[in-house]
Length: 211
Image 1 (cartoon, rainbow, N blue to C red):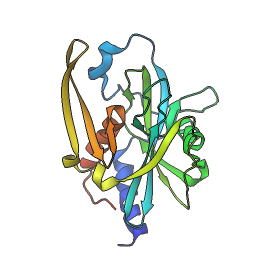
Image 2: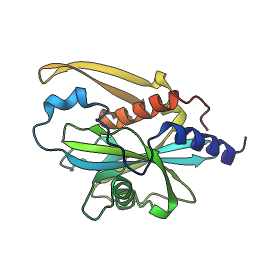
Image 3: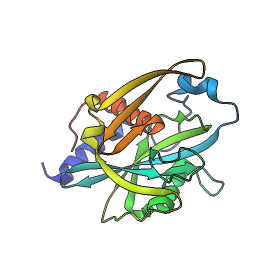
């Protein structure tokens, strides 16, 4: 297959695996049981962009490393994203706006495909992951106030269960678990890794190849 044909196969597979963009479904957070007892304040709505970039060598997923001086999740690997503001029509608009602000990704260079299951964070965010394709030339322009680094990871690597480790530890009164990937110098864990596992599990229900 050509790269374009491979991308089309993945697009069709995602169309079957993801929740529709409109209307945004009412769903319980995918990881609610892991963090419910840690939440001591109302949740704030947020969205992140799970951006897929089709390269000649295969589909890549865009990730960032957050600046060390940020108030929450400093230095961690994350997706572009943030809180849903009053100016946003919903999670899709928020994810696209945040991606443009954080890494310079123009909204017109993206094609939103669907939603993953929502998740909650210990910092009290209710997060909608928006899966989208990036098309046309794109060179990241990270906002130095928020983003220390922008990098890509092959989708095949992230969707291989052998590359994901389940970690357990006692914390804040009970046994908890989280997921973790290692890619080069990067540790991908927490909600970012959970989003990737959710994507993998949803794709596993709709078998097919990955470009």
